[in-house]
Image (cartoon, rainbow, N blue to C red; front, top):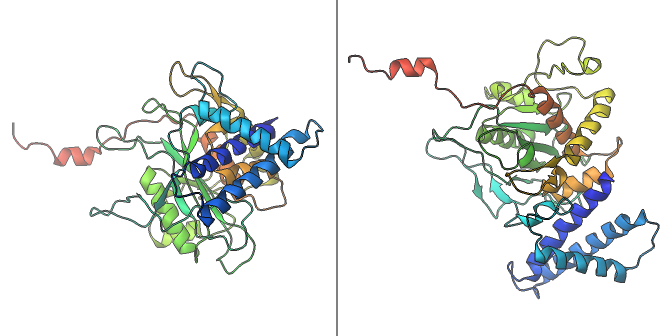
Length: 365
Protein backbone atom coordinates (compact mmCIF):
# COMPACT_ATOMS: atom_id res chain seq x y z
CA UNK A 1 0.00 0.00 0.00
CA UNK A 2 2.81 2.44 0.82
CA UNK A 3 4.48 1.82 -2.53
CA UNK A 4 1.21 2.49 -4.32
CA UNK A 5 0.95 5.82 -2.50
CA UNK A 6 4.54 6.61 -3.50
CA UNK A 7 3.71 5.82 -7.12
CA UNK A 8 0.69 8.12 -7.06
CA UNK A 9 2.83 10.90 -5.61
CA UNK A 10 5.49 10.37 -8.27
CA UNK A 11 2.95 10.51 -11.09
CA UNK A 12 1.54 13.74 -9.65
CA UNK A 13 5.01 15.34 -9.62
CA UNK A 14 5.75 14.31 -13.20
CA UNK A 15 2.29 15.46 -14.31
CA UNK A 16 2.75 18.89 -12.74
CA UNK A 17 6.16 19.33 -14.32
CA UNK A 18 4.78 18.30 -17.69
CA UNK A 19 1.91 20.75 -17.30
CA UNK A 20 4.38 23.58 -16.62
CA UNK A 21 6.21 22.77 -19.86
CA UNK A 22 2.97 22.48 -21.81
CA UNK A 23 1.87 25.90 -20.53
CA UNK A 24 4.78 27.59 -22.26
CA UNK A 25 6.22 29.05 -19.04
CA UNK A 26 9.61 27.49 -19.80
CA UNK A 27 9.55 28.40 -23.49
CA UNK A 28 7.76 27.39 -26.66
CA UNK A 29 6.74 23.74 -26.65
CA UNK A 30 8.01 23.50 -30.24
CA UNK A 31 11.57 23.77 -28.92
CA UNK A 32 13.23 20.39 -29.24
CA UNK A 33 14.50 20.29 -25.66
CA UNK A 34 11.07 21.09 -24.22
CA UNK A 35 9.14 18.71 -26.47
CA UNK A 36 11.66 15.97 -25.66
CA UNK A 37 11.20 16.55 -21.93
CA UNK A 38 7.41 16.49 -22.28
CA UNK A 39 7.64 13.09 -23.96
CA UNK A 40 10.10 11.90 -21.31
CA UNK A 41 7.61 12.73 -18.57
CA UNK A 42 4.87 10.96 -20.52
CA UNK A 43 6.95 7.79 -20.86
CA UNK A 44 7.86 7.89 -17.17
CA UNK A 45 4.23 8.30 -16.16
CA UNK A 46 3.11 5.49 -18.47
CA UNK A 47 5.57 3.10 -16.82
CA UNK A 48 4.43 4.07 -13.32
CA UNK A 49 0.73 3.81 -14.23
CA UNK A 50 1.42 0.31 -15.54
CA UNK A 51 3.01 -0.64 -12.20
CA UNK A 52 0.25 1.13 -10.28
CA UNK A 53 -2.52 -0.87 -11.93
CA UNK A 54 -0.59 -4.13 -12.09
CA UNK A 55 -1.75 -5.05 -8.58
CA UNK A 56 -5.27 -5.32 -9.97
CA UNK A 57 -3.93 -7.78 -12.57
CA UNK A 58 -5.08 -5.44 -15.30
CA UNK A 59 -3.07 -5.39 -18.51
CA UNK A 60 -3.18 -1.88 -19.94
CA UNK A 61 -1.85 -0.37 -23.14
CA UNK A 62 -0.50 3.12 -23.75
CA UNK A 63 -3.94 4.46 -24.68
CA UNK A 64 -5.39 3.46 -21.33
CA UNK A 65 -2.34 4.80 -19.51
CA UNK A 66 -2.63 8.11 -21.34
CA UNK A 67 -6.31 8.31 -20.39
CA UNK A 68 -5.40 7.75 -16.74
CA UNK A 69 -2.74 10.48 -16.94
CA UNK A 70 -5.12 12.93 -18.62
CA UNK A 71 -7.75 12.40 -15.95
CA UNK A 72 -5.14 12.99 -13.27
CA UNK A 73 -3.99 16.23 -14.89
CA UNK A 74 -7.58 17.44 -15.09
CA UNK A 75 -7.95 16.71 -11.39
CA UNK A 76 -4.74 18.58 -10.56
CA UNK A 77 -5.92 21.65 -12.50
CA UNK A 78 -9.03 21.87 -10.35
CA UNK A 79 -7.04 21.77 -7.09
CA UNK A 80 -9.10 20.22 -4.29
CA UNK A 81 -10.52 22.42 -1.57
CA UNK A 82 -8.92 22.43 1.87
CA UNK A 83 -12.02 20.95 3.48
CA UNK A 84 -11.77 17.87 1.26
CA UNK A 85 -9.59 14.88 2.00
CA UNK A 86 -6.43 15.44 -0.04
CA UNK A 87 -4.15 12.77 1.39
CA UNK A 88 -3.60 11.17 -2.01
CA UNK A 89 -2.43 14.36 -3.69
CA UNK A 90 -1.15 16.31 -0.69
CA UNK A 91 0.65 19.51 -1.61
CA UNK A 92 -1.19 19.79 -4.91
CA UNK A 93 -3.65 21.97 -3.00
CA UNK A 94 -1.10 24.33 -1.54
CA UNK A 95 1.99 24.31 -3.74
CA UNK A 96 2.62 27.57 -5.52
CA UNK A 97 5.43 26.18 -7.61
CA UNK A 98 6.53 22.60 -8.19
CA UNK A 99 10.19 23.38 -8.76
CA UNK A 100 12.45 23.54 -5.73
CA UNK A 101 15.02 26.31 -5.70
CA UNK A 102 18.32 25.25 -7.21
CA UNK A 103 21.09 27.02 -5.36
CA UNK A 104 24.79 27.57 -5.73
CA UNK A 105 26.36 26.52 -2.43
CA UNK A 106 29.62 28.38 -3.02
CA UNK A 107 28.49 31.89 -2.09
CA UNK A 108 29.42 33.85 1.06
CA UNK A 109 28.41 37.41 1.81
CA UNK A 110 30.64 40.24 3.06
CA UNK A 111 30.39 38.85 6.61
CA UNK A 112 31.57 35.46 5.37
CA UNK A 113 28.19 33.91 6.13
CA UNK A 114 26.75 31.32 3.77
CA UNK A 115 24.35 32.82 1.28
CA UNK A 116 22.41 30.66 -1.18
CA UNK A 117 21.22 32.18 -4.42
CA UNK A 118 19.21 30.62 -7.28
CA UNK A 119 21.53 29.59 -10.10
CA UNK A 120 21.21 28.30 -13.64
CA UNK A 121 24.81 27.06 -13.54
CA UNK A 122 23.97 24.02 -11.45
CA UNK A 123 21.57 21.18 -12.04
CA UNK A 124 19.86 18.96 -9.49
CA UNK A 125 19.87 15.20 -10.06
CA UNK A 126 16.24 14.18 -10.52
CA UNK A 127 16.83 10.77 -12.17
CA UNK A 128 17.23 7.39 -10.50
CA UNK A 129 19.19 5.44 -11.36
CA UNK A 130 21.75 7.83 -12.81
CA UNK A 131 21.60 7.82 -16.56
CA UNK A 132 24.67 7.77 -18.77
CA UNK A 133 25.72 11.33 -19.47
CA UNK A 134 23.95 12.80 -16.41
CA UNK A 135 25.72 15.67 -14.69
CA UNK A 136 26.78 14.12 -11.37
CA UNK A 137 27.91 17.36 -9.74
CA UNK A 138 24.40 17.94 -8.41
CA UNK A 139 23.08 20.96 -6.55
CA UNK A 140 21.60 22.13 -3.30
CA UNK A 141 17.81 22.27 -3.51
CA UNK A 142 15.82 24.33 -1.05
CA UNK A 143 12.11 23.88 -0.44
CA UNK A 144 12.02 26.10 2.63
CA UNK A 145 14.75 28.47 3.83
CA UNK A 146 15.75 28.28 7.51
CA UNK A 147 13.37 29.97 9.93
CA UNK A 148 14.84 32.92 11.84
CA UNK A 149 13.38 34.59 14.90
CA UNK A 150 13.23 38.31 15.72
CA UNK A 151 16.92 38.22 16.66
CA UNK A 152 17.68 36.77 13.21
CA UNK A 153 18.71 33.52 14.86
CA UNK A 154 17.76 29.97 13.96
CA UNK A 155 16.27 28.23 17.03
CA UNK A 156 18.57 25.62 18.52
CA UNK A 157 17.76 22.07 17.42
CA UNK A 158 15.27 23.13 14.75
CA UNK A 159 17.03 21.30 11.92
CA UNK A 160 19.17 18.21 11.48
CA UNK A 161 20.91 16.61 8.51
CA UNK A 162 20.96 12.93 7.58
CA UNK A 163 23.95 12.20 5.33
CA UNK A 164 25.03 9.16 3.33
CA UNK A 165 28.60 9.67 2.02
CA UNK A 166 30.14 7.99 -0.99
CA UNK A 167 33.34 6.01 -0.67
CA UNK A 168 35.80 7.41 -3.20
CA UNK A 169 36.22 10.12 -5.81
CA UNK A 170 34.47 10.34 -9.17
CA UNK A 171 37.06 8.12 -10.86
CA UNK A 172 35.13 5.16 -9.46
CA UNK A 173 32.24 3.71 -11.48
CA UNK A 174 30.32 2.44 -8.47
CA UNK A 175 27.29 4.61 -9.27
CA UNK A 176 27.08 5.85 -5.69
CA UNK A 177 26.52 9.54 -4.97
CA UNK A 178 26.52 11.65 -1.83
CA UNK A 179 23.13 12.43 -0.32
CA UNK A 180 22.28 14.88 2.47
CA UNK A 181 18.71 15.65 3.59
CA UNK A 182 17.78 18.54 5.89
CA UNK A 183 14.85 17.74 8.20
CA UNK A 184 12.90 20.43 10.00
CA UNK A 185 11.91 19.21 13.45
CA UNK A 186 8.49 19.78 14.99
CA UNK A 187 8.55 23.07 16.87
CA UNK A 188 6.44 25.94 18.24
CA UNK A 189 7.99 28.63 16.05
CA UNK A 190 7.09 27.66 12.49
CA UNK A 191 4.23 25.23 11.70
CA UNK A 192 5.14 24.48 8.08
CA UNK A 193 6.79 21.22 7.00
CA UNK A 194 7.51 20.01 10.53
CA UNK A 195 9.39 16.69 10.54
CA UNK A 196 9.67 16.99 6.75
CA UNK A 197 12.50 17.42 4.25
CA UNK A 198 13.13 21.12 3.60
CA UNK A 199 16.40 20.96 1.66
CA UNK A 200 18.88 18.52 0.19
CA UNK A 201 22.28 18.20 -1.42
CA UNK A 202 22.64 15.29 -3.83
CA UNK A 203 25.73 14.94 -5.98
CA UNK A 204 29.17 13.60 -6.69
CA UNK A 205 31.49 16.41 -7.81
CA UNK A 206 35.08 15.96 -8.95
CA UNK A 207 36.48 15.33 -5.48
CA UNK A 208 35.25 14.69 -1.96
CA UNK A 209 36.55 17.98 -0.59
CA UNK A 210 34.25 19.85 -2.95
CA UNK A 211 31.30 17.75 -1.84
CA UNK A 212 32.13 18.10 1.86
CA UNK A 213 32.59 21.86 1.50
CA UNK A 214 29.03 22.19 0.25
CA UNK A 215 27.77 19.74 2.90
CA UNK A 216 29.25 21.71 5.80
CA UNK A 217 28.03 25.00 4.37
CA UNK A 218 24.52 23.51 4.21
CA UNK A 219 24.83 22.66 7.92
CA UNK A 220 26.04 26.19 8.64
CA UNK A 221 23.18 27.69 6.64
CA UNK A 222 20.55 25.75 8.63
CA UNK A 223 22.38 26.10 11.93
CA UNK A 224 22.44 22.37 12.55
CA UNK A 225 24.61 19.29 12.88
CA UNK A 226 25.19 16.37 10.53
CA UNK A 227 24.36 12.76 11.37
CA UNK A 228 26.07 10.39 8.95
CA UNK A 229 27.23 6.87 8.21
CA UNK A 230 30.84 6.78 9.35
CA UNK A 231 32.24 3.67 7.68
CA UNK A 232 33.11 5.41 4.42
CA UNK A 233 33.77 8.82 2.97
CA UNK A 234 35.89 11.56 4.50
CA UNK A 235 33.34 13.52 6.52
CA UNK A 236 35.32 13.35 9.77
CA UNK A 237 38.66 13.93 8.04
CA UNK A 238 37.36 17.06 6.32
CA UNK A 239 35.90 18.32 9.61
CA UNK A 240 39.27 17.87 11.33
CA UNK A 241 41.28 19.57 8.59
CA UNK A 242 39.03 22.63 8.45
CA UNK A 243 38.13 22.79 12.17
CA UNK A 244 34.46 22.03 11.56
CA UNK A 245 33.94 19.07 13.88
CA UNK A 246 31.37 21.08 15.84
CA UNK A 247 28.99 20.53 12.90
CA UNK A 248 29.17 16.72 13.31
CA UNK A 249 26.79 14.86 15.60
CA UNK A 250 28.26 12.35 18.01
CA UNK A 251 27.32 8.68 17.76
CA UNK A 252 23.67 8.06 18.52
CA UNK A 253 23.03 6.36 21.86
CA UNK A 254 19.76 4.72 20.77
CA UNK A 255 18.50 4.57 24.33
CA UNK A 256 15.05 3.38 23.21
CA UNK A 257 16.44 0.26 21.47
CA UNK A 258 18.95 -1.58 23.64
CA UNK A 259 19.49 -4.27 21.02
CA UNK A 260 20.68 -1.62 18.54
CA UNK A 261 23.14 0.08 20.87
CA UNK A 262 26.88 -0.19 20.26
CA UNK A 263 28.73 -2.34 22.76
CA UNK A 264 31.43 0.27 23.07
CA UNK A 265 30.16 3.81 22.78
CA UNK A 266 32.97 6.34 23.27
CA UNK A 267 30.94 8.99 21.42
CA UNK A 268 32.87 9.25 18.14
CA UNK A 269 31.15 11.00 15.28
CA UNK A 270 28.65 9.37 12.95
CA UNK A 271 26.81 6.08 12.95
CA UNK A 272 27.70 2.57 11.82
CA UNK A 273 24.83 0.94 9.93
CA UNK A 274 24.42 -2.74 10.87
CA UNK A 275 21.90 -5.14 9.40
CA UNK A 276 19.78 -4.92 12.56
CA UNK A 277 19.80 -1.14 12.33
CA UNK A 278 18.81 -1.29 8.66
CA UNK A 279 15.88 -3.53 9.57
CA UNK A 280 14.67 -1.06 12.19
CA UNK A 281 15.49 1.89 9.94
CA UNK A 282 13.16 0.59 7.24
CA UNK A 283 10.35 0.51 9.79
CA UNK A 284 11.15 4.07 10.88
CA UNK A 285 10.99 5.26 7.25
CA UNK A 286 7.72 3.44 6.59
CA UNK A 287 6.08 4.97 9.65
CA UNK A 288 7.45 8.43 8.79
CA UNK A 289 6.12 8.27 5.23
CA UNK A 290 2.73 6.98 6.30
CA UNK A 291 2.07 9.46 9.08
CA UNK A 292 -0.83 11.88 8.56
CA UNK A 293 0.23 15.45 9.24
CA UNK A 294 -1.44 18.85 9.42
CA UNK A 295 0.57 22.07 9.31
CA UNK A 296 -2.11 24.63 10.09
CA UNK A 297 -5.16 24.40 12.34
CA UNK A 298 -8.22 23.67 10.23
CA UNK A 299 -6.31 22.30 7.25
CA UNK A 300 -6.89 18.82 5.88
CA UNK A 301 -4.38 16.14 6.83
CA UNK A 302 -1.97 14.59 4.35
CA UNK A 303 0.50 11.75 4.36
CA UNK A 304 4.02 12.95 4.96
CA UNK A 305 5.20 11.14 1.83
CA UNK A 306 3.20 13.69 -0.13
CA UNK A 307 5.48 16.49 1.02
CA UNK A 308 8.37 14.94 -0.96
CA UNK A 309 9.19 16.86 -4.14
CA UNK A 310 12.25 14.84 -5.24
CA UNK A 311 11.16 12.26 -7.85
CA UNK A 312 14.48 10.41 -7.50
CA UNK A 313 13.89 9.88 -3.77
CA UNK A 314 10.41 8.54 -4.53
CA UNK A 315 11.89 6.19 -7.14
CA UNK A 316 14.46 4.96 -4.63
CA UNK A 317 11.80 4.34 -2.01
CA UNK A 318 9.71 2.35 -4.51
CA UNK A 319 12.63 0.23 -5.74
CA UNK A 320 14.58 -0.06 -2.49
CA UNK A 321 16.41 -3.31 -1.73
CA UNK A 322 19.56 -4.23 0.17
CA UNK A 323 21.71 -4.93 -2.91
CA UNK A 324 21.70 -1.67 -4.88
CA UNK A 325 22.85 1.91 -4.33
CA UNK A 326 19.97 3.78 -2.69
CA UNK A 327 21.84 6.77 -1.36
CA UNK A 328 18.86 9.05 -0.72
CA UNK A 329 17.04 6.30 1.18
CA UNK A 330 20.10 5.65 3.35
CA UNK A 331 20.43 9.38 4.07
CA UNK A 332 16.75 9.37 5.06
CA UNK A 333 17.36 6.35 7.29
CA UNK A 334 20.18 8.17 9.09
CA UNK A 335 17.81 11.14 9.50
CA UNK A 336 15.18 8.86 11.06
CA UNK A 337 17.67 7.68 13.69
CA UNK A 338 18.73 11.28 14.26
CA UNK A 339 15.11 12.34 14.87
CA UNK A 340 14.71 9.50 17.37
CA UNK A 341 17.90 10.61 19.12
CA UNK A 342 16.60 14.18 19.40
CA UNK A 343 13.11 13.16 20.55
CA UNK A 344 13.47 14.64 24.04
CA UNK A 345 15.54 17.66 22.95
CA UNK A 346 13.30 20.70 22.64
CA UNK A 347 13.64 23.27 19.89
CA UNK A 348 14.50 26.46 21.77
CA UNK A 349 15.70 30.02 21.10
CA UNK A 350 19.44 30.46 20.94
CA UNK A 351 20.65 32.29 24.01
CA UNK A 352 23.34 34.90 23.90
CA UNK A 353 26.32 33.86 25.95
CA UNK A 354 26.72 35.31 29.42
CA UNK A 355 30.27 36.25 28.44
CA UNK A 356 28.97 38.48 25.64
CA UNK A 357 26.29 39.99 27.87
CA UNK A 358 28.85 40.92 30.54
CA UNK A 359 31.02 42.90 28.15
CA UNK A 360 28.02 44.69 26.65
CA UNK A 361 26.87 46.07 30.00
CA UNK A 362 27.18 49.72 30.97
CA UNK A 363 30.06 50.29 33.37
CA UNK A 364 28.20 52.90 35.41
CA UNK A 365 24.57 53.60 36.11
